[in-house]
Amino acid sequence: MFKYLSFIIISVAILSCTNLDDRHVFNYKITGTAEKVSSMKVVMGPGIDYDSEGEINLPVDIEHDVYGDDLNYLLEISHLDVNADVKLEVFIDDELIEEKSQFTTIDGVNTISIEGVFSED
Image (tube, rainbow, N blue to C red; front, side, top):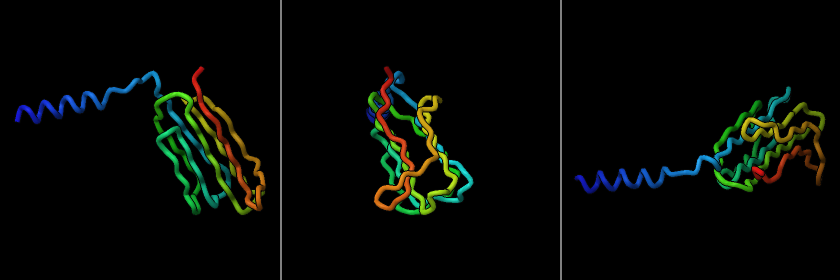
């Protein structure tokens, strides 16, 4: 019994060791008077890569802790109405990285996209 308890304690101790200096809080917000968007794609570092492939009700507020450096981020929505009131905001560590509300039409699809690589330098 003692061996099992020791093994569990050692495993938890090793697996819980994380360099908190590399911790970043990603927060994505989608707001506006539109009730929904046609689709949404989200990338938050290496941990989250999500494509809704369907409608999403608004507002949306996603927050996730991400660890590391040179972290990819992407928040992209599409909507049938190019005049819909939708605003995207990307915050990293409580700092507004970028916000957009203007649709771009690419191959007949109206999209708003914010993407980049976050590096703490």
